[in-house]
Image (cartoon, rainbow over the protein chains, first blue to last red):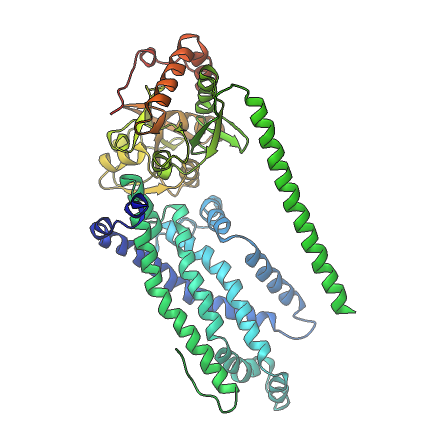
Length: 247
Length: 275
């Protein structure tokens, strides 16, 4: 029992390596921030392409649905390994793009960002779609009968209503994105799990991993409460006579 | 109508899944029982931890592991009448796990170091090792020092990584979870060198092509089989088995099979005091 606590909850050890682990954790936050912006944009584009009407756009819809299904089905780890190990071999791509060192970040960072964006783009697209499909069809019909084009109706009528419906599920995706940023450790990017495992290899003590876990909890728990609040607010909007109350 | 069809489909899917799971379990247990009857050595089976793959020391699929370490521990097990059962595990936790009794012994191309000896006891050395600097074919890098200031890969928790950190202060050093990932990064061109155990490097050169060994760095390292601290009975058994295997020529045979080289003479005289 004491061995267990010594191995995983050695607070003295955590204190000694606190800054080192925190610095590595900031790398996770950085991956998260970059990917969140990219994936939210990419997901919206995919969702809009998927909603295009008519026979003319069937290939686009078909492609988009295929993409979304594919990237929701492949484990992220495999996408990360494929991109980091595969892209550098594609010699027709200029070297600065194949092996990117943009903004002072090493290539594993960018491979990780690309892989997470591709996968989370597919997941966020589905959340957007749920929002878009939850807007009553009459809204689109009314907008079209006023003479708006499909794009105008989407831009000014449907999407603005859709995005108010989805913050809670979207935040859930973002929480899971933050946690999945640790997967980039497999291609040797120095984020918190990699650094913790380095410390484990040096000292045979796992406490750094628990410290990393604590950082994640510290960031994510408040977010989970925000999700609750958003759900309650949404309920309040559509249920007559209710009021916002969150524990 | 539509609903019933969907329900049927779902039921069929679940059934198929259940059949797969049951079949999987059945297969597992039958192969287990085969193994235990095949053991027949009288003594209890010896559970052995190893980080697989690390060719040519350990490689292969579950239930059918092979490699220098694996064949050696099997030969030793035969001499002392205990059939080894090898489990794949992660290198960075391997010494902790043997110390906690998750397995009886570890054979995983593990260098005997003072640090590790604070957690476990090591057998007599069964292998003398060198580190190799692995580069792309035709690279300007000729020695370890040439990698200064460049991007260098190594495997997490290994002596190669420590060596790179000591010798190459100005380089970006990337610790990959597995050796083959580091070699792959070299081939992809995202790193310019890999510092890794010489036999692993030689095997990678042979199997993959396009890469070469620039320099071998002697490190006075030797590999040992690790057991939990204070488990002197098992340690003596292993040392006795190892001695027999070395004396009757089995060691030489296994060594030549996996490294295509004669074993160094010193290995037959090296001994090691567990601390």
